[in-house]
Length: 412
Image (cartoon, rainbow, N blue to C red; front, side):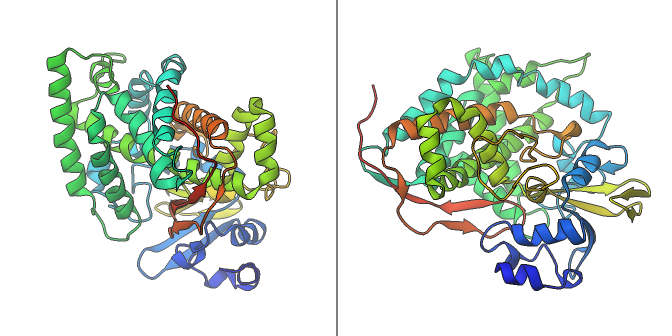
């Protein structure tokens, strides 16, 4: 897609889910037109029926915060009802629940992600990042996606859940299988993957019980109780699948796309090197700029109004977080990458409300440490080849980012 195409196309004729709009990444020029001319726009498709596209931050936030009117459970959060797995199975995952079930399960899961628990992980996360950088630093070059961004969150997750390091390649295989299924219109493509993960987690639970390991996330979730309620093993299995997929996928894509953003804005990179205290602020800008999860869906439970448009009961609404994170009503000069930007109300973790990302604290911790160590240890870093991406309306994802740097030495 070219800017001229985005400026000239008849908005009433386009299907925003057509992958052609995402060949070069999120179609920011097109989203800008839609925000200006049709912020709540009816979109017809040949295969998936009709839905409403929301591109304005205020409308996305309003829908996100009104779970009684706009449901995650009714038809799921993807444009295909049974994408990845049958909806009846997916409804055991927090992401697909509405109150009161959502409130109950979130309290249980949140008990394992309180800030104090996340803060205790800093040394463990840094140790993982150090190991991964050690594996490439003497080479002077690597693929920032496969060698860095993919490995770090999976290894952190394995440590967090008490899983063996040698199982990380299997976790990656499952992650890729789920992501592949999420980028098709074929329903229930990942059922076999979920079943394999269920068997694996069952074996890990049995092993950790035998070893008396009650400190891993798996066992903390198994033992967590809020107001007499506990998760059963199928619910833990599905949350595990969500963690392996979402917890890895979003952090890895923000890492690789965020590194690309810094390398393509060398003045920002040098500012960050000179002022490392800006890193927490820079992480928020990287999250806003990359917005790797581009949309989720809600279904109207009754007639309603959004942005001046009448929404009928049963209508689906696609919330374009990527567009919301560049809304000029929320951000000054949103098309400029600025690590000192004071506004942090981006939509990288959703539009707010009950479905705000449960792992946001851990993601921020990982990203801060990743960029601290990359900037400290990989000197003279630059892009060394053409980046490659997954063309997808759902996830903003690089598949390859060649980089080179001055060879260094391993630590320790």
